[in-house]
Length: 247
Image 1 (cartoon, rainbow, N blue to C red):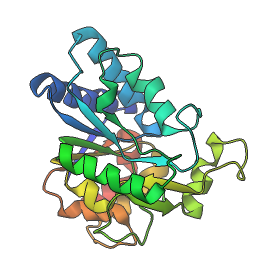
Image 2: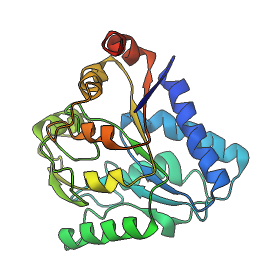
Image 3: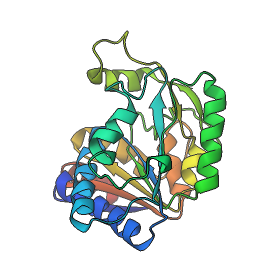
Image 4: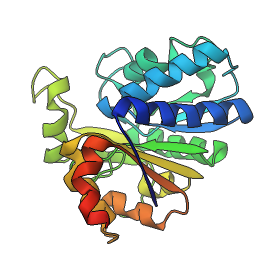
């Protein structure tokens, strides 16, 4: 597990975007594992700029998002489908939307949808680069504390910590989805390369816990210690807080 720190989230995001862009240029049939949330906004902005400048063909690139809320339609502005369209897919017109995959949170049979998503991921994979954020409780995707390490894509209940963290995106707590379809931990770990991204002092505590090296289902992200190719990409605001624990 390697730590890469940059002077700002803008610089860190540019590095991640450059790595993804290089992959797409050198491997046109690459498979990307994508994440959402505030942490990824600068990453996708930087990637859009690179794609626009290079005019690289995206038609054979496949993407798989980590998760989607249960109950939200593709047109709901708080859905991750809408997020991805706004911040990455629609501005770059050469994406082949048949190759873009997100779970369908409005599926009639959610269990079947999760199973089909896992199968599609398995058929297309392994993922070349998997982007991850990390929740305040150590979740990756929506794999909350206590999730078995052998979990695959499934319907999950969101923890109180996650609901509080995501509350700002919804009009009220009552309006928030309480479930999601999420890739499992085993699904994530099949990726060839994983880039976990964390910015800001507020993530310093959970990143410090991750870096202790103790692997436990109480901290889902800790499984990454058992993956051979993981980078933790942070900005100096976070790194300055955790630096002492790395000495």
